[in-house]
Image (cartoon, rainbow, N blue to C red; front, top):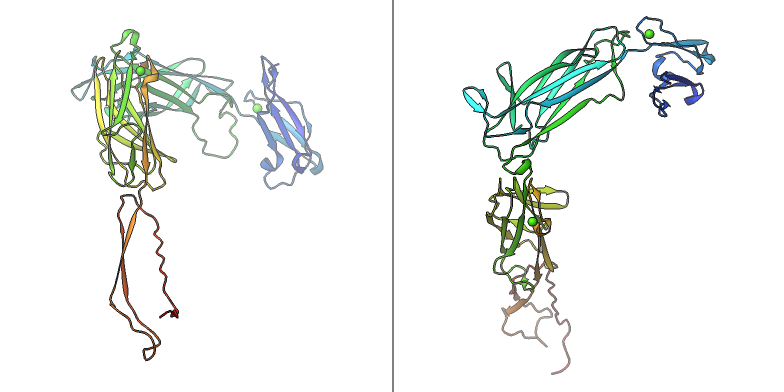
Length: 432
Ligand SMILES: [Ca+2]
Ligand SMILES: [Ca+2]
């Protein structure tokens, strides 16, 4: 069965609705309705009720090749004509003129400079019953869609101008592919050699008027609105697939395992990380170090801090590519002065990744634990201004005396609160 079905629900929402179910050649009828039309949404100011109690056999009253529906609303003595618009399905494809991007092969030139490039070709066609021979579509071709930030790793040249994305209005033909090609120029001095993805999307132009247009098509609901395709960079590995073998080792300089550090004593620790590669080039090699929130980094160097929710991660560039038998060492200085006295240990989790395939992932990780304890000693020294105080018969009732105290934090760890308790005699003893 390929025909659509309309079903009335005259008492739904008190005023009535009609459901449209689309026919499906494979399974008969699609179980989910494609449209639910409430009379309240279409009747304007008319107070119609009982919409959907009767549905006349469909017919095409305006000769646009689409069946229209006459629907009764018995509680208000009215009928409503629902007209149909043409439905189109758009198909699109993306392709490249080469399999891999090779930055050494600079076959395109722009502004007298040579660039490596790839020809990006897109083809579009549409199908569907419509009286028009061509269909107007707004087409957008986006380059490097996974780009970090907003900068693409290449550009198109359209009418002698550089652009990252192409936006065009095209007239495409029914059942015949319309194809367009653009050279995509690869920027020089790239550091990111992950695949470059392109996204082609299309939409129908917005209608200007609210009045019914019997020949204006609408997009089929299950029509894909975009296609994507990506192209990889050429690497000097066999079959274009690099299999690297990275190893990560990390240590805190001058720190032996299980040694307990005193909070506040030496507030700077040096983390040394070494990465080696024993196989194919490792492209875009990065070390990630998770940091506790109260540890900060004093030298960023090749690293940058990624702040996510409740998580602080240091991301460090190690090499692009890090070639076979090469090793890279770098140091990160950690500031522990913000540790609170309840801290017992600090855990650093490190990992190294690259965009090459990894032969043995197990040794790409390391966990370091640094133990801490708090030492909180205070001393107190008191002094008095009055060397002696006289009391007894003939002396004033109130005695004024002045004393000073110096409280010193002797130990290195921070102290949040010091309680100072002082006892003062308020009555005279009877002895002597
Ligand atoms: Ca019609
Ligand atoms: Ca490994």
